[in-house]
Structures are given as structure tokens and as C-alpha cells.
Image (cartoon, rainbow, N blue to C red; front, side, top):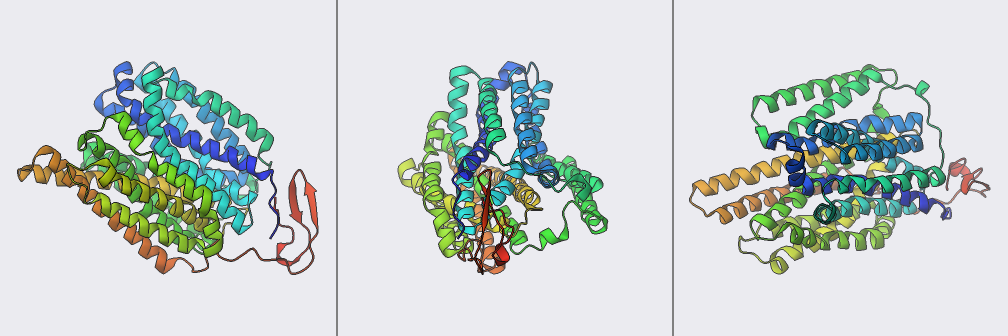
Length: 502
């Protein structure tokens, strides 16, 4: 196995810091919404756009951003994304009205998409060895999973202590440090160049189609699934994405080349991730509401109640997930994690209206932490396993797009199911709290079914020798390495020749 170059770890930490800043921002804002509404005079319907503007831009641009990273250089796109996100955070902090804040949130979404879409591609380039890549992806996955939970606590503390504008102002010094560190530590790389082809019509169709899809999904909470607005948006998204598919068959240099979809395990891994994230988002958001409206916890206590999950994710993903993937293969680790997640959802599907946190919630929290620490790095490892250097950004953007759209779909569907079931129980004469608890139990039971579906897809479609299962192949002959700015390039030695290994 090629030795690990220590200088790669600062680069990984920079990518993790960028991911953490972006993901934290998505959850801290939710806690501050009531204060934002009082200060800027948002209507109830308009307030949703503080969140939706970000989601539409972020989810719609991930695929295009990933391809731009391949063409222009992933480091360049990452720096541009962090810079735009930081400047947009400043615009959010000084917003004087709803329109300014919504526009600035859209800018944050664009910057977040640029930075996040290329991060996994950079990790693939930094860590070509399967075992080290698995450990690096486990660390990166932890920042995403834990950041979403920590953001709930951080948002509440910042809003209470320093006001809602502080949740955006805190991004300024963090973003500046990330930019300075990235310029110094992230390896410079040339993209394959715009001459290699940017399918502009395909990019426009894909971006508009994804934005329309996300817009329709996030609007279901207000307008319902069968409203004219939702159906019209769904038809528009289907037409745009259908046009994108046709365009990819005709374009000389398609945005999503067919060879990428033929990478072993890529489509299957994204399908598994879609189903898995549909359920996981429901756990995070619906349980947070249930803890308050059913079990009677306040906002601060709810935030702390989630803390065991990120702690467990940290222990598993940082401590053992990478080693398990390297030893047993990503597929086996993923199946184990999905089985655990199913158990966690089934525990929540029996949560009574008079339940106690320690007895009825905490066991599920710990199980979800264990499951998340296994499944998130494992599915990402499979999705990025066969990506070449030329297409790693695109594969990264595709994985992030699947995650964002899956989360939006899952939350919308599960929230609708919970509300519908609760309405039916109220009509049947159930007390308010019991009816709400019954609705959430239904949603969590459906979430368990989604995870079982993900497990079935993974067990039947993923190759048994997934990324990380075989040890790194030794070169067939003696190898010579050349050191250049702390990066090693294999000059001889069979199939490893010319490969960047540091």
C-alpha cells in the first residue's frame, strides 16, 4: 500500500470545515425563524422562503457545480463557493427587509452548492488508496451528520444570546479562515478545461428541472400534494428533466456522460442513499417537533436531547467505520447500518404519548448514531469508488444532489403522512396529544419501510466486492516515486504508474 502523506490531512480538515459551516447554517436558521419574522415583518407564507430560497439554489445547482469543478478545477470552484457563501452571509446579517434576506439566502445556496459539490471529488483525488479514502470519507461524513444536529443547539444559543443576525455574522471569520487555509493547503489542480465541453443547454435544463422539483416539494407543506401549484411544478420539473435526459443522448459533450452512470455501484448507491436520506431527514425534523409538542420539552432541551446521536456518530465514523469498510467492504458495513436504522425507526414507531425520554427515546437516539456512523461513510464510499479524476466532481455533485432531493422528498412525504394520520385520529375522537403521537408513529413506521427498501436495493444491486473491500493492490514491479510539494506520483510499477498518491 502507498504510504499516507501527512500533509493531506490539513486539506481534509479544510474541506470538513467548509462542509460543517454550510450544513450548520441550514439548521441554525430554522431555530431563528420566529425572531426573523418579528424583526423583518415576514408573513407566515413568506417566512418559509428564508429556508426555501436556500434549498432551491443549493439542490438545483449541485450537479452543474460538480461538473464545473471537473472543468475549471475543483480547488477554484471550492474557493469561489466559500467566498460567495461568506459574502452572502454578510448580506443576510445586514438585511433590512424580507426581499434582501431571501435574495441573500439564495446566494448562500449557490455558494454552498459550489463548495459542497466538489469536496468529495477532492477527497477522491487526495486519497486514491481505498483504505485511506474510506477513513477520509468517514471523517467528512461525520461533519455533515453531526453538523445538522449540533446546529439546532448552536442556533438556539446564538439567537438567545446575540440575536438572529449573529447566526450569519459568525460565518464571516470562519469563512475567512477557511479561505486563507484553502489557498495555502489545498493542492492546486487544473481542470480538464472548458474546451472539454460544458453542455450549456443540458446544464440549463438540469438546473431548472432540479430547482422546479425542489420548489414543488418544499411547497407541499403550504399548498398540499394535489394542489394545482404542486402538480404544475411537478409537470414542469418532469418536462425539464426529461428534456435533459434527451439532451444527454444527443450532446457531443454531455453534462452527465453515460460512462459515469455505468460506473459499477454508482446508480445503485445513489438509489440507496435517496431512500435512506428520505427516512433520516424525517427522524431529525419530525422527532424534534414531537419531543416538544408531545413530550413537552422546550426548544433548548430538544436540542440537547439530540446530542447522543452526533456523539455516537463521531465515535463510530471517526473511530471504526473506515477500518470496518477497509476490512469488510463498504457493502457489508452499509447493510449492517441499514439494519440498525430499521430497528431505530421501529422503536420510534411505538413511542407513546406519555413516553419518557430515557426509556422511549434515548435508545433510538443511540442506535441512530451507530447506524449513521456506519451508513453515511459506507454509501458515500460506494458512490465515489469508481469515479475517475476527470469525473470525480460530477460524481460528487450527483451524490450531493441525491441527498438533497431525497431529504426534501422524505421530509415532505413523512410530514404529510403524520399530519393526515393525526387529523384522522382527531376526527375519531382522540385527544390532541394522543392524535399527534399517533401521526408521528405512522410516519416513523413508513420511514422504517423506506430503510428496508434501501437495504433490499443495496443487498441485490451493489457489487459484493465494494470499494474498500480488497486491500490496495501492490504494484507488479518495483516503483519509483517523485516528491513534488508533498505529493507523490508513481512513475513505474504496472497499473499504478503515473498515479497521484499524495
